[in-house]
Amino acid sequence: MILSGKEIRDKLGKDIVIEPFNEEQLNPNSYNLKLHSELMVYEDFTLDMKKENKAKSIMIPPEGIILEPNKLYLGRTKEYTETDKFVPMLEGRSSVGRLGLFVHVTAGFGDVGFCGYWTLEIHCIQPIRIYADVEICQIYYHSIEGNYDKYSKGKYQKNNGIQTSLLYKDFEK
Image 1 (cartoon, rainbow, N blue to C red):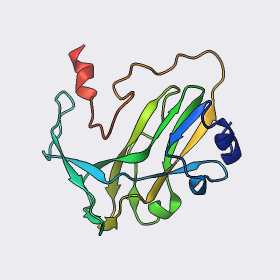
Image 2 (tube, rainbow, N blue to C red):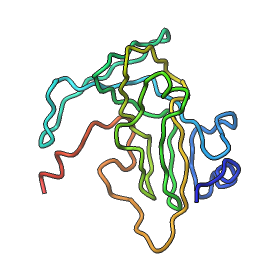
Image 3 (cartoon, rainbow, N blue to C red):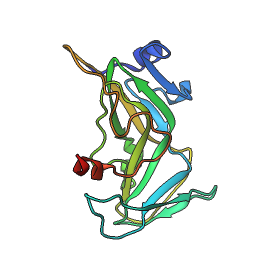
């Protein structure tokens, strides 16, 4: 089952953390998350799964920044989220998608127990000017049934900002 917006609000501070929380971003069955002002882009055109790929930080100025097609931008949510009772899921907002802007390539599924900011895998169909603080995506929560292990020691747990791929660490084992 997916939690309703009212249920998300009722569970705030108990089973769900969204900081900062703004009542105006609450939807009937989700909560809109805003885009932080920092983006990262990989420095090399060809990426390697077995290596740490260098990335540089760019800031979105008040007048916005134009994203280029066929380029991956990593962003993050302005809000920190946490839950150890529900499965958090992330999706782009339809208004954003209708402009040809995608906010995640494959990472819209969170693990129960995830704590942190959501790294967004942003790409666009055609050039588009984006702005910081725009409500870019939405989080919703699924209930979980049965016994489960909480996500607590993963590579991306308790992050403080945008995280590039840490897949290379899987090859170090």
